[in-house]
Length: 210
Image (cartoon, rainbow, N blue to C red):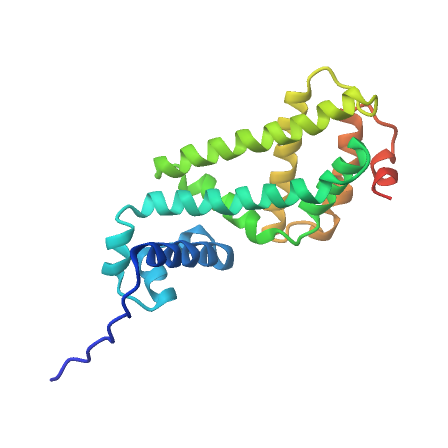
């Protein structure tokens, strides 16, 4: 029986091939989650053999960790730009919560949820998750501290409130992935809790959102 030969992938410069692999890993993660970022999955995405991918990326744990980091870093940069032009800390916080909880970022939520699970056995990923969570906490804490300085928020422990706030957001978004309760209602469920945590009048966040 004759063997069907796989067409050889066209040669590309090493840098271009690495960029192609990196891009394919990111596309796979956003479409199907981090578990889709495998040697075979990446190879199929770009039409090459798994051996070729392994030549350029011999450590798949490292590729998964880098893919996670690229996705969540890009999201935070985007959110920083989105809220940065708003006039007050309260309006920035309201927009941040609305954007994170409106269901349009469930692809990134899936990446986070799978990273927490896969990080148990992937040390490189676990380290990257911890680093990115620290960056997120610092981002939210900075926003809260600006609100305290402006007299809009009232708390003596912005770091703890930032930690609690991220825990609530992550939990609600994870629940929405399996459509528990009304996923569309997750934003309104958090508003009054956040107002209480920050000593704001009831409805203040909704008013700040405009």
